[in-house]
Length: 256
Image (tube, rainbow, N blue to C red; front, top):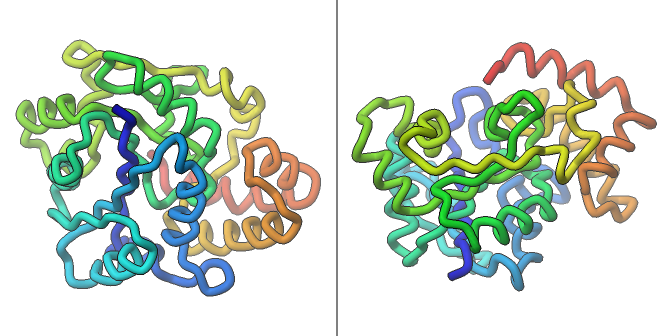
């Protein structure tokens, strides 16, 4: 069975409220742009679900999904782990690609690679890691997704009541490799030059993130870029190295 893409999205961000629904490019919000990018993978990952909360504010996310013909599941605002489990069960998903809606620049090639590995694997959790062994979900690059099985999510939910692990969907799994089968693929295998750019931050969490990423996205789309990590790094290195200074400040202020 093909993995199902489940996207975590909500409007109630503490640091940047309504970041999912604020116009980002030509009137389109970040979530719409991300969904449009993911929809180009129809042959590889055809089933996409947006998992948002039952908070009344998140009706805007449900409305956007309905307009785009994307399945939307609404569940617990605070117990995001249970929201994911319920969303997966609602569509009969067994293997899940977890995508954070904060990552509008997600690397589609890495996503397809992850889906292929997950499809043929018996591991509970598959993602990427830095040279130091840090899971990519804990980095600020914004290029990577995670692969996880529904069984592993259920097992984790049954093993811990910690609010931390129920807010951060996969945290318990990759932090307890003695209890789960965890596979982490070196980032260098896919994007060899990425870790030579420690100040690169393309995850969306603050107003500074939004402003810088909006400029980058607008510039690159105007020239027909595919938004690959290599193109992004070349653009920043040669045309706007000053953006790294802003990114570095934001990284230091929002340590993962």
